[in-house]
Length: 166
Image (cartoon, rainbow, N blue to C red; front, side, top):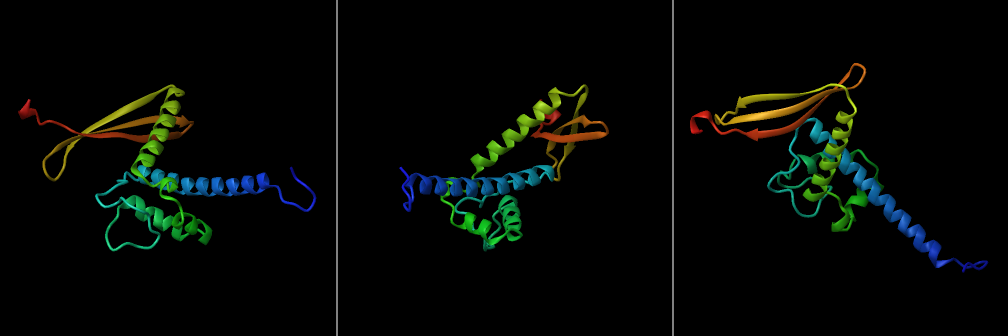
């Protein structure tokens, strides 16, 4: 109960919980934007040294596109957001590969919903060989989202078995 001149414990806990929730949402918003950027530019999210605690300072080694892009984004943000990432508990930093996969899955679900609501769409398939002479197949999806706005989405990139091996 709240009495005159006294502070209710529930109000203090509620305010503290709201601040934590706001910090988590802000961190997640930045992570989503970096995942979206990497997807649009067809950049890899992970490399072989991108595990462990996230540091806002530049590391001695290359820790991947995702972490570098997030660091760049945070460099332009205010100090409170930087502190939010620096002091985040490991279980709510939202930079793990599991979180990245979940975000990508949510983007994919949205694309499927968008395609379900259009009249026409096309799948583009292109085979090419890389510098190591490995045949690869890329699949892309193209559809008209609104009048005169054509959307292209990369779907997958798969290695092909050479015809002479069949």
